[in-house]
Image 1 (cartoon, one colour):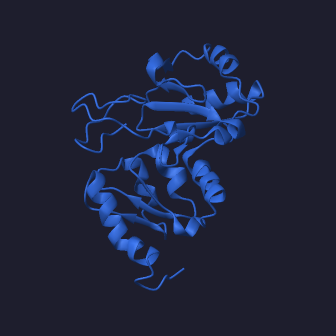
Image 2: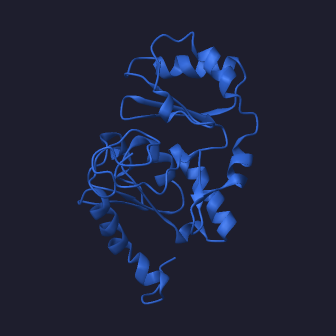
Image 3: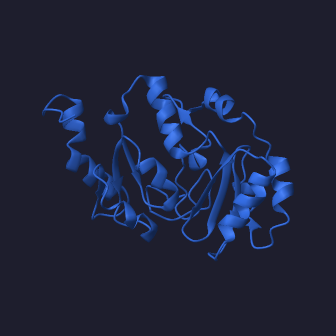
Length: 214
């Protein structure tokens, strides 16, 4: 989890930056959690939606037979996200999928940065969370802009909203460069996000200052 103030890469789910002490106001846990509204309240409707057929304790017990994954620390585990560490390797992901599917689990598996392995309910992901909010707020997906930098952002970036990949992106997103609605910014971190907003003239279009191409 990157600090927007000092760009330090923190452990997932921490509430304050471990480098500069800045308070984090929003953490979506790879799309398994939504905080919205002025007070950033936990969206209970989203939790109810993704909880269907989700049994984290049983999934955890079945994955114990796989010796090449290691659970991350307890502080990053949540009710709707199981996080592991795994180094790249031939057929490793296939093995995990095999164990999960033979036990008839419904799940979403996200592997990013050659180390982070997250298992979520099958209804959860960053892209699905964006679609949920689009429906809830009545905002068309084409009027939403999303930004990302790592592999766990790929599914969200490939959706209908306008996408921005910031300059400090992980090489695993390079395959998205040919996508029509994804802009690769040159600047890093928040600077890349601002560059993307300018590229799409996003704020100007929202205010009706320039024609909306959509």
